[in-house]
Amino acid sequence: MSTVLECKPQRVAIGQNSSRYEIVDSYNVRPSSNRDRSVKLWYPIIPDTQYQRVLDISVSAPWPWTVRREPEYGNLMLHAHMGALEDVEATFQIRYLVERTAITHRLDPACVRPLESSALFEPWLRAEQFVDVDDKTRKLALEVVGAKTNMLDQARLVYDYVVGTMTYDAAQQSWKGSTEHALVCSVGNCNDIHALFISLCRSLGIPARLILGQAFEAPPPGHGVCELCGYHCWAEFFAPRLGWLPVDASCACKYGKHQLFGDLEMNHVAWSIGRDIELSPPQEGQPLLFFAGPYAELDGLPLPPLDRHVRFNEI
Image (cartoon, rainbow, N blue to C red):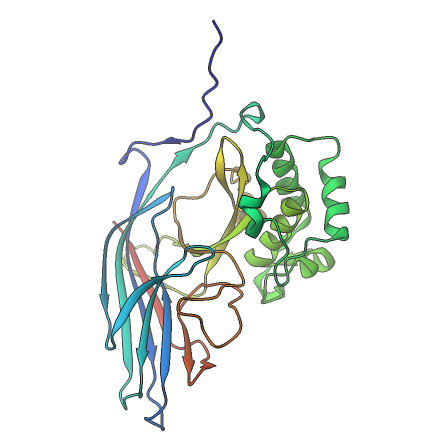
């Protein structure tokens, strides 16, 4: 009798290996000296994924709003529009209860089959702004994987190469998540590090994508609530019969946590997927390099980032 190889991801029972976070995401829109000016606001909403569940959510907003989903990557967002700015500061706030649940994967190359329908993954195989897929990245990718042809083996070799060659230093980042910066400088932040990983995977025909979110560090002793700025990002690649698998080459570079191939630390919560994003309804400005936080336009012109505060509490 033949043995069936179990390749599906296994969800750990809730409570055995999970974390819950209360999250308060606030954003202030300042008043304008010209009250006739129109403001549109797009605000990312934390989604359900294979690693996280939104158990509760509430919105407090001073303007009428709707929930929209952009068509290409499926990112959820709150959209609000005020035809004329008031002379008081407008505060938007989204409250969440989010549960991060572990998933264990059997990372066995024998589970993986070749990608049969690459057209289904076209957005995750092409070049993007500052994420290169060209002769240079294909040549390097082939050198990295050598004779390996299995997609899981190839992705692991790409991950090891990125972790082994890149140094994490946010002060020397490109500010745009750039493959070229990573190749030339071998240093950058999480976005540069994963731009290189994604480029090399796509150059081998392995679908790969960027995930934007937060890494919730535990508050200092005696502090029950913590506030953070910025964002954290990681990547996912697709392996047939295993699905989308996470990697965090950035934390591996920064902290030496090399188990983060096919796994994530439990403090990671995702907000959005992808780059070069056209919002819903479409913004008048250029596509967003990534959707890490609120984006606003004043009379069709992008507003600079203003007064966002993310507070969290692990419960």
